[in-house]
Length: 76
Image 1 (spheres, one colour):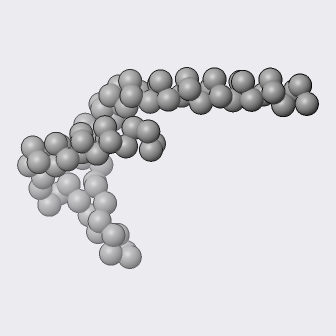
Image 2 (spheres, helix red, strand yellow):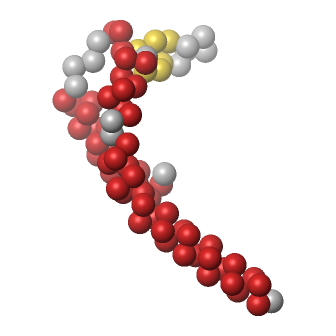
């Protein structure tokens, strides 16, 4: 998550600034927390391609590191 956090934060701030929320978009939990209702779930799910595009290069880097280190460990 951390490598793509700036992109997510930017998107979220833009969404908050440009979306007209209603009271029905939120609910309060027993412990006083505030959560989004399921009304926004389909819209948020549609953003998945944005995050896949951003995270794929990071996944490839981690994969390369793990594969390279596996070879080093086997040599020892």
